[in-house]
Length: 296
Image 1 (cartoon, rainbow, N blue to C red):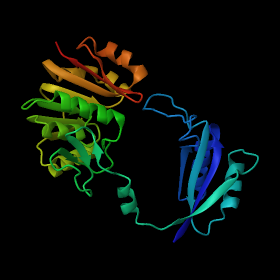
Image 2: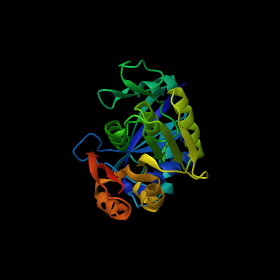
Image 3: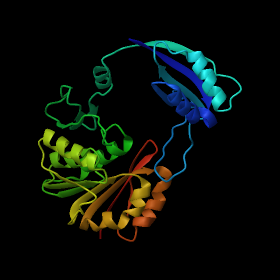
Image 4: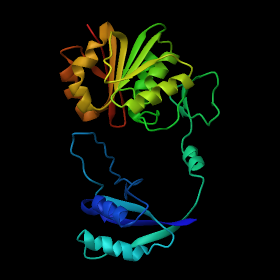
């Protein structure tokens, strides 16, 4: 089967509305991209719950997929009229052949080298360096496959900080990648907690796949105890709210690392956490920072 892959430009004010209307009219999929991606005018966007973000890029490209026999021109004209545009946009159509989507998706994820001794390897790949510490982790529903700058920042912090026998808590564990890395780096007692029960299931399965022992729980089951190391790779809003709970799990003399924080948010997070422990910028990648500190 050959589908129709349709592309056209939109302004930011209509892009999201256009996508919604296309899906209601029968499009199989519709997504918004930065029309300036790959140029000096590219506009990176970072957002999180509770913060106002732009609905789309200033110059947006809409990509939609339609059935082989769909009348794309008529559908775009109808949708444009529905959302108050004077005319339908100019568009291009390319045939999209049926493919092995699983194989295609897998081909987009290669092993990631975090450092000289730490790799993240999808399960379908051969390990590039069998002598390295290899984290076997497939892209999935739970956040954290190692490709995001914040995850890389935390992995690099763990590699520098974990010593044999320490205890580690991964607060907001997602896929469990940080807890698993900590265990493979030598942490003895490893735990993780997440608000999403699905993430907890994924994290436990990933730990078993990697042959490490770690205890994961969702936030309905309170985490007990203090740890030598606590790492929280979440977003600034929950980091603000959860500061007392996170810091309570760091033992005296223990270390805390926070990420999921944009560069311009760092000073505020440092100020909030100062009443429990001093933080400083440990590392920066792209527009994201990792904060770390020792509890007095």
